[in-house]
Length: 90
Image (cartoon, rainbow, N blue to C red; front, side, top):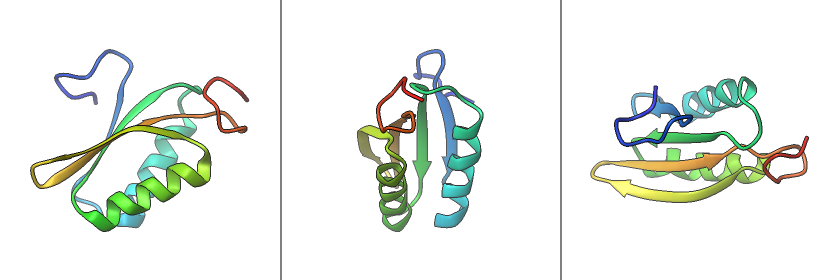
């Protein structure tokens, strides 16, 4: 569910109550169901989860245009990429 300030079409993955592997699993499930170019906002509660999400996004070829600390959590904006690592390609 998008946050109150997210534009329409933004998918929220709240990993603040999950361990690193749970956050990655939730992101994998979310990305399987959306088209290339979809914007996903991931919330994580700690630095290790943040690092894991960044590494996962790089490995998958997704873009992370925003990585912001918000109080005690991190908000990462991830844009789903196609197989070649660019939005919109398949």
